[in-house]
Length: 432
Image: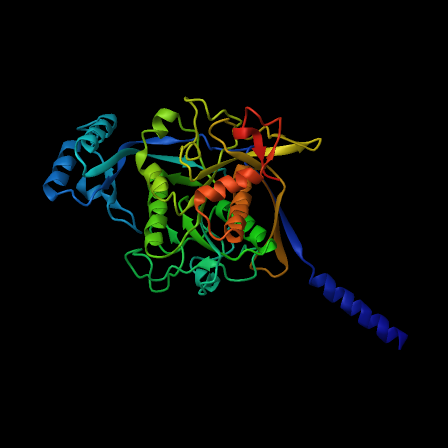
């Protein structure tokens, strides 16, 4: 009998050993290796918005004057079709001249907005990130109920559904609320959009969006906040994104809110240095954000280059926009029980509202292998911004769905002051 028990115990121990979890240790520090500064202005493209009163003759006149290549005109694949990306024939006109001309036209005639010069920029390269999921398959994570207290749009690299910290469906159901089209079929698409490829598949093939989203969801799960996430892919597998795709995604949020989607918060954990003279000339995105001042709080990261973004020749996009419904987040660390600016975090007394912890964001994420999980340690203002998005969502739930400006002021009122952040961050405040 004793031998039988010994053998059974050995078999049980071997079984438990064979079923033990293996962890992939992943460490990411945005400030240690970043290409945030790689903003590149387009040599031949401008973003415009046409107003409803523009006539065909007037539109043709503008295109002829600016030498627009009609075959290259692009529309947003979701939302308002008045937004267009024009490609200029630079053999006949310089891009600077085309931008200036269109701005003059928009000032003299009330039928066109913008002439914002297209640009691209990059996120940090996450190196060895490999997507777990295959294209498609998001519908199993869509929550068809309508009892969420807060809805959050995440503009990023998309979402890898297998790498999730949540155990329940959490994607926002947008069926019947939009006009998105990939030219094939949208019958099976009920949440999210890929603005890079103009398709319904927002699978993350870079990693950043998956990490950001999971910080938001895991924090909300831990503090008992009902939520839905709308993943909007605006960066490709190399972490490159464009002003055009961000404009389309933000306008899509505005569009579906008009149809009843009720997006309350946009998380924008991205950015790039941009001199103020350039950011101030890009009016279209700013107007979209401003137009949603009573509906959507736009929470954005301040960057990880240890730069003073108050400086006119540096600046930062999009955290540098001066609108009441933008909350710009820098990064701090704790030294002797006091918050000090993290050495990698950007700073700005007027351009950054507060700081969150720069580091110490940990995730345990599933993979397709039951016995393998990702153990991820994250550092950077992107991830601090995601954490603050979760705090904003809780404030929204606990205070009867207040306006974005009340959420922002309420959060900042609760933030703690640090004498070591005075002169670096607005009012020297940080979130614990």
